[in-house]
Amino acid sequence: MTSTGAPFSSLGRNLRQVGSSPVCWAWVAVILGIQALVMAVGGPDRQPAWGWFQMLGLSREGVFSGRIWQVFSYGLLHGGWWHAGVNALFVLLIGSRIEHAAGRAAVTKAVIFGVIGGGIGHLVLAPGGGGALLVGLSGGCLGLLLLLTTLSPQSRMMPLPVSGKSLGLGILAAELILALIDPAAGLPGFSKLGEILAGHGLGGWFQIGHACHFGGGVAGWVLGRWLLRPRITLERLRRDRERQEARESRRR
Image 1 (tube, rainbow, N blue to C red):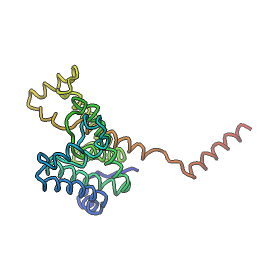
Image 2: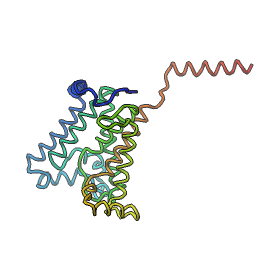
Image 3: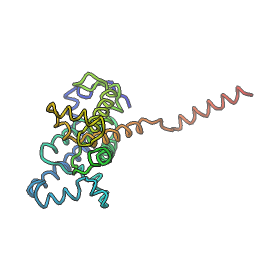
Image 4: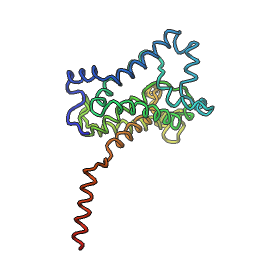
């Protein structure tokens, strides 16, 4: 699939796409519905919601104790309305582009693979091996974004004057670097740079799940490459057979 337009160049077209993207709206309904339930019982810091977070949120301890489902279920929970709302908006704005260009199944695959990839990235790269409890659909959101930039590498990603390919690679590189230089990770050399940034008032950067974002983005990129792989069709097989027969005729 190729695209020659900028994803946000036509507001009217984008709004129509958002309004007619049932899969994206279904994901938004799930995210906000679960958040409404959490808030209705007192919020994530009170029971019974805190018990749900311990059971479904991602942690190294939980996975090692057999709660493998946490690698996906953490994406369904959020820390507050702002967290859930931003991710829901992201799904609508980016996911609707994919739903209309690559199909409904591509959206669901990107979200699921992105969440799982983000969970694995958190467990592998986050400080302490992902010991802190992780929640949020951010991995799935990055999966959607990297799928879009991979499927439309030449598109201009407004409002930034860069191509989809450059934006995707830049995001992956930035998230990986920020994950590695986190002072809490304690990596020789890398952590020193993180300490310098924190000393200049940028310590808030390391409160974000960069390892999760990186893992989700990689999953979206892999999915995009898979969707763009050469397909074997009857027409392709016919052309290959004709070329083979032509080479054999020349040898005779």
